[in-house]
Image (cartoon, rainbow, N blue to C red; front, top):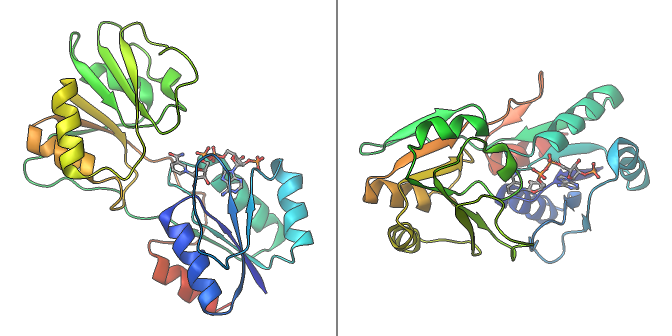
Length: 243
Ligand SMILES: NC(=O)c1ccc[n+]([C@@H]2O[C@H](COP(=O)([O-])OP(=O)(O)OC[C@H]3O[C@@H](n4cnc5c(N)ncnc54)[C@H](OP(=O)(O)O)[C@@H]3O)[C@@H](O)[C@H]2O)c1
């Protein structure tokens, strides 16, 4: 038995390491977009599979008998495709989806379904900080007349695409103090973020509360229909033990 763990998240790293510790044969898979160290001793493959056929090839070549999808809640394409292939091929399959964030007293949150909905919540003349990453920056339409700041990990490939805005290049982790100081320094009025959930990204929400900023959260894409889903690393390890 070899479990393929689709990673790129803290959960993916922990599940792969947990299986290796339990002497379960595991292969971790990373898209290879960012630096994601895995624990020593965990076999890893890096880079896209090259589509559906490539995925099936890896499954056959590496003797994969089950798949744990521990990718990020917003990695919709890989999650949808993997669920479908596993269903079609009768491969045991589990999705690990950490819970989304919930507001606390003092929070001023609004949820949106799509990037294009953000503009309605940022009055002209205000500054919006996009903690959503650069990948879908183009989808935030209608933000003319606002100052747009977008955080990215890697150096900017070129000038900022919005007329009135800039890249903010920095690498996590970010502490509450860092985030508070950054938002104050940049004169942020509205924080926009994906509802990623988890502890690692929470500091920006705490900072927004401390500064009294409005937060706009982008809703998660739906989970694949009929998929078996758990929320924690522990539940995923238990599932694998029962295979
Ligand atoms: N989306 C986010 O906000 C976010 C945040 C933090 C981390 N991540 C991590 O970054 C990776 C890419 O995210 P995304 O949103 O670009 O995904 P995506 O849009 O769902 O997937 C795009 C393509 O990337 C490849 N891919 C994605 N995850 C992979 C994995 N674990 N192993 C091998 N190939 C993978 C696949 O390429 P092929 O078609 O060539 O197989 C897939 O078709 C994911 O592993 C995710 O866990 C994403």
